[in-house]
Length: 235
Image 1: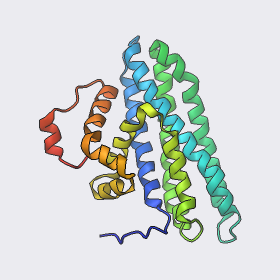
Image 2: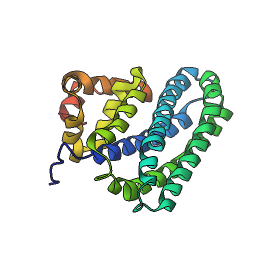
Image 3: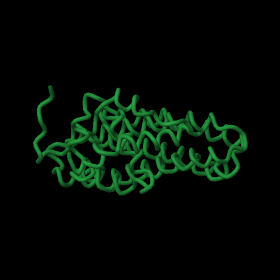
Image 4: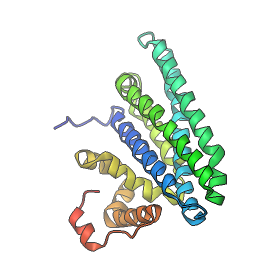
């Protein structure tokens, strides 16, 4: 069992869960885009709204790192400048892929044109390897540098900016997605990071609301009470 983190230490574990959220949700979105039938604008609008929310969140995640993390590390003589240059170039590569998605997404959303769908599917496919490479590098090389260089309050500003970037109508869905990303082994830590009122909401109604939001995204019916009971408190 992992040692309990002191409240004065930066919580880098939360960023790992955020990374898992991006990976799982972009893979989900790519598959959902590919499955939308020609001219089914009802589905294209639902899927596009989800992808737009992810893009906004990822862009803010990287902008916060550009503004709050890299400048602090650049001034540290013990940090390899080549590592930070690699991080910045990976951000640029991901930004180019997000730009390709943003270029096509509004037209596909409004038309469900199958040719645009295929272009968008390819853009999402190109994004995923770049994202996986960057997040793995960040977890392996950057997060170990955080303790001793950032206070818990300073590091917490990244979390605050990330939460603020989630569109209001997607917050329940993304909260549930965070629970899934945390997995059973880190579920209690996920709950512990939530503000008290949000934790209460999640325990009382959040999981059911997330199931309905997820069913709407996937175009399926939410699981009934039997399915919910079988899952109990775990996502």
